[in-house]
Image 1 (tube, rainbow, N blue to C red):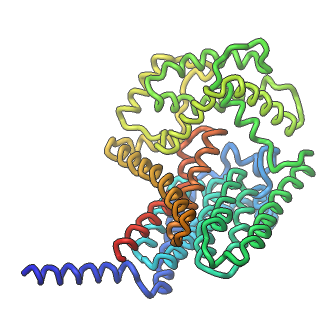
Image 2 (image 1 turned 90 degrees about the horizontal axis):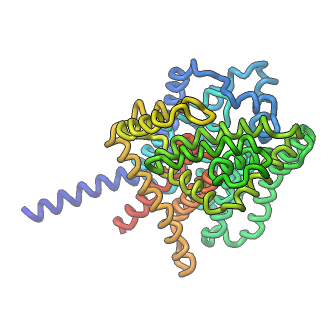
Length: 479
C-alpha cells in the first residue's frame, strides 16, 4: 500500500514537472500572443470612452520645459501622420500588451515553464490602472511598456552570446529615459548584467559596456539639445526644482520665515505643519501630506519672480537644497514616509482606516490653504473596490514579502559573485529586478509623493522578482 502510494506520488510529480517544463514552447508562445492580443481588444472596448486629455497632457503636446523630448516627439509624429491624436490610445495599449507578451515569452524561454509564463502574462496585463492610462496622453503606460521591454531584453542578453540583445537593451533604456527621466535608473539593467553575468559575455564585456552606454548617452544628448533649441537650457528637462521645493516646504520645520525666498508660502506652511504633526499615524499623515505638495508648489509659483524656465527651476532647486541642509533629518523623515507608502501602497485603506482619516479631517477642517480635502481619483477607486481588510492586509503582506526579497536576492547574488560561484539566469534576473525596484522607489521618495500610481509603475519588477525567486526554489527542489 505504501509502495503504491509512493508510485502514484511520483507519477503525479512527473506530470506536474512535464507541465512545468513544457517542451513545445514555440506553441505556447503563440498562446501567450493570442491572450495578449485578445486582452488588448477587451481594453479597447472597456476604456474607449476614457478622456484623451488629462491636466498634464498639454505640457507634452506643447513640449514644455518640464517635459523631456521623447513623448512630445511621439505625439508630434502621430499628429503629423494622422492629423489627430485619436490613434494614440490604440497604439499605446497594444504596445503595452506586446511588451507584456515579449517579457512573458522571454521568461518562458529562460524557465521553460508554461505555468509561470502565463501567470506572469496575466499579472502584467491585469495592471488595470496602467492599462487604462494607455488611453490618455500621459507617459505612464509607455514608460511601463519600455520597462517590460528592458526586462525582456535582459533575459535575452543573459542567455545569448550575441551582443545584439545587450545593445538592444541599451537602446530601450535610452528611449525610456527620453520618455520619462526617472527611467534613467534602468541603466542598472545593462550595468548589473555586465557585473553579474558569467563567461558568455565576459570576453567582450568592456567593449559592450562602452558602446552600450554611448547609446544611452546619445539619447540624453539628443534630449538636452532639443531643450536647448526650444527653451535655451542644456538638460533633458527642468522639473527637479519644482518637485523638491514642494516637499522641502512641507517637510522642513519653519523657523526663519523672514529670510525665506517665499515668505508668504512659508507662513502658510506653518499651519499646514501643525495639522500634519497631529496625524494619529504615519499612514494618515501620508494621506494628507501627498496632496499638499502640489498645493504648496502652486503657491510658490505665484510668489516666484518671473524668470526663464530653466532659471526658475534652478531657483527653486537652490531654495529647496538650502532648506534641506538646514534640517536634513526632517527631510529624511519625509523620504522614509513616502518610501514606506510605496512599499505598502499607502493610498489603499481599510474601511476602518478610511473612517479614521475622515474623522481626522473633520477635526481640522477647514484645512490650511486647501480648505476642503479633495480625494485623488485613484485613491477613491482603491478604497471603493479594495477596502476589505482581508484584501488590504493581503496586499500589504505580499508587498512586505517583496521588500524582503528585494534585499535578500541581491545579497545572495553578491555572495555568489565574491565566492566565484556560478550565478543562474533566474538569480541574475531577480537581482536586477530587485535593484531596479529599490532604486525607483528611493528616487520617487526623494523627489515626489509615494502615490499608488508611482508604486504600480514598477509592478513588472515585482512580478519578475517573485517569479524568479519561485523558479530558483523549484529548480533547487528538482535537483
